[in-house]
Length: 451
Image 1 (cartoon, rainbow, N blue to C red):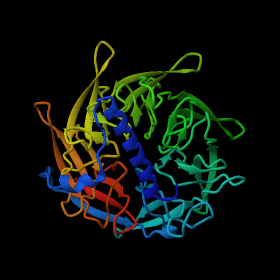
Image 2: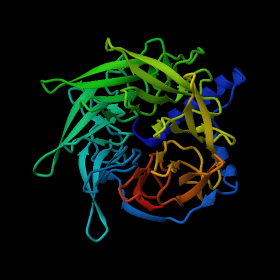
Image 3: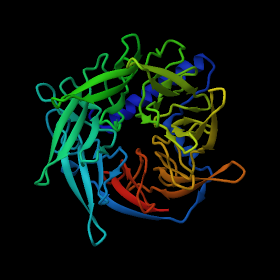
């Protein structure tokens, strides 16, 4: 995969495959042809809220990277870190001169209010004996020492993706260490999602493909895995596959299939996440992995989607233990929803659709999840919808009402110079929102919103 367009083609193929299956089974059709989006944009927009939008950086392709698809992270000094799917210097594994295998970047604020980009690492996407990865979809995370961790969807010695670490040097440069390269078999393949750290320094993540040899998805054998990387005393890392998803495209099992998003940890050490497909309606699931005393893990499917469908983003917790997230498809207009899952006393979970996108000015097709503020408001992005002249996506806020309903406020609609926010949002210490737009007439951009 050398470009975002090629990845969209594969996702669209998956979408058409799911439609065919669900039509045959008389189940909910969870996808919609992109050609219908333009017609849907005439639907009345959602409520607009007063907010200030500022472009912090515009990607110029080539060495500076372009096509930023991952969520940003910040350090204590207010610097922003992220990845781009393409751009950087071109190597033999990276496709044409306008593409590149992506970069890891840092944006540093200047006293005059401008921001300066520093490219920390340029991916080469090469094969053995080189182990560097290429095409990072997810962003990076920071540890307490200032090291960055992330994944590349492809590249590495076997071409199926990597987990990497970037360590800062005293002279301001950064050194990459490839912690694990996926082999495309039972260990997993194509990690679209990033990783998280636990208190002991272990890394957890997912792969979209690989795993069970009895399962198949659009990227090859296997329906994905959940993995853990542990740090050994000699400096190497060891992968442990915690779960291999087993939902076959041709069967009707309960297990999920093809996790596009990563996982989160709760206070008890359980992992929670979503799968893009699988489940009782083949519309995706929310799952929990619980550790056992013998070192194994047990999966519990908390919810199988039917109303909202095909969640490409993960979930978050609130203080009461409820889960929030999005589905990319489904809902009243089949262009995605924001949902909440609440835990019942009998151990089951109930879905509440907080908002169903119309495909008009309020947005359509949220690929990213949501974040919470201290007062219970939710914030997120949609890839399409918004302006009737563009339909290039929106940044939205969902505010809870006293009667239990929620009201959407569109904070910004992209007009084409920046377009199609694929990633979620970062909430800064001041309450400002930071995010990326993956495309547009520019090579994508980084923005700030004061809600």
